[in-house]
Length: 195
Image (tube, rainbow, N blue to C red; front, side):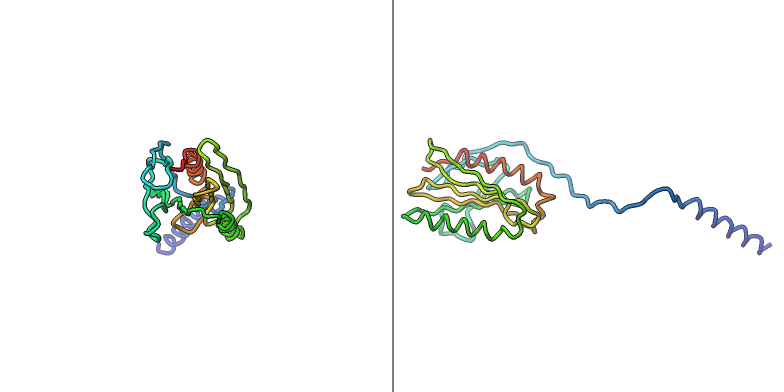
């Protein structure tokens, strides 16, 4: 009797094992997924608290003084906490040294070219407000700053801006956020005025 029960249990185990194996399905590892990113509605407010310039920034951003340069009153960060990123804005007065500042911008861009797959730039020219400059966009998975720009009136003022995230960049997965912030940077540039 014990022998028959053992044989019956072994046969039942084999039937269950055979039934659970489906040889027609091809199992592949699932691709890595990312969290859904909810993007806020676009809405802007004027930032008019700085001595040398003003601009409009998103209402979901915080404009804070640069903590690493407390003596520089016109250096600010446009922080976007929901994206863990910020646009750093630095102002320098011009005194016949525009070429030096342009070379600094070129050096900063060159540092990121090793990780970039592509670089696009576009001229900025607003004759009405005397705002001129260059917008530089870098594509690539590990680029630390996907967007940089500078603005100048060519005689007295120079502002450099750069977008940074507070984590190791994976710009392929962050592309929807980068595209979203690109619109905010475009708006900042288009509403930028010297005082």
